[in-house]
Image (tube, rainbow, N blue to C red; front, side):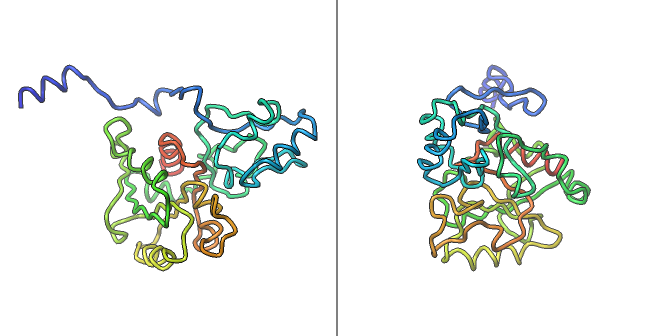
Length: 247
């Protein structure tokens, strides 16, 4: 026991000071994209044609964060002249239409539903459902429980049973085989409840969009309250979304 205490004393506090202290992510991180309206039309058209997710509207100079997998193809192709990725990890929205953007996003806290804050402001219990996900989004949700992020210090926890939950967090494109299990989990969660879609697969179907084997977005099956884009979303993206929407 003395060795453990000595080790903890030597290491000090390893928990992130976010959100009290701003965090700068590494330069290689691709966060919120910015669309540059002054780029030549032919360059915008080339980027839109090359986008594997058909996430770029070259005519209106918009990018759909719900479809985008942040692969960086558009940035490399245009050398940052049409689309460039910032290090801003605050990407989440409460209205799906806001995912179609030129790079500007409304403050999430302004769109949080007041009754959610009253009901869950001091305690939020969530059941995570992997609906045929690849485990990338799931891993970056799991890491929130580590000492560095320490999600529990904000009164937010992941629970084993939907009957103990205030809402569900869904990852993956929702395959046909997982649809029944997902809907059963939703029904087992007591009202009032929230639904959170995490990752491009849950938001739009991701790389599987258009396949008859998956849902083209969780909102086609359930009423979604919070959309967290990314492939996968950074843990700080998830943390920012939860804190600003519910706290």
